[in-house]
Image (cartoon, rainbow, N blue to C red; front, side, top):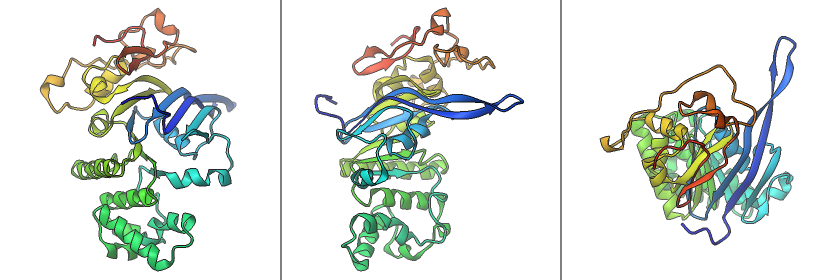
Length: 324
């Protein structure tokens, strides 16, 4: 995909730090949840964000939709900076951006009927629409995600996990956003249900020509829907590139480890896995965060590697990249 036109979303040098208590006296340390993350999402493109728990991927997702404090860097949406803006200044942004959360039950008020929850954005952004108009709009979207119009009168607890996630998708897309961020939307679902939700996601993003950021710990899941993949580890980008190239020939040892953590669909894609070498030693300050676990690590890794081009739009931050 060409990058000659301005991106829909561009983040540069994102930094988010969280305080943590440590030691017997409760001294405050700081953890870098995001440490200089760059991200670019083109119009109509799906970008997958992949990483283990604690990689910073959910923090990144919340920052992209202005639901998290940002300590450094910038986020531009359609050319407009959103970091540091007051909520009233984000009204147009809120209308054009949606989010689907990991837990579809926790993201709904159990005392509010589904029709009211899905139609909340209509009340906020289309106040001229009367109750009948909102109901018609909500019914159309419930049917579009595979449910029925009569489901508007039911409560969230009356649906299965997969059905609740369909409702969450309808709520996120009802205003026809230009971008939607999905944070682990299928991780809590059975495998059979995951497939149906992924198929729905793929159909909706394509038919609506909508950009999306899909966050997951499962490289195989995101490989089925993303145009590009960004791999995070401890708040830093380890590798990024076109899905086909990154999945077939990962250049960073961590990406390879993630790929081997789930079975490949075809035996030809299997390679001897890189062993995980856990350690209690923290990574060297300023060095590669994956260095304590990496079997290819050397003294060079005590200095953080920069993202280096490995192919067409394919980059990895590694002093000892795997062979392509």
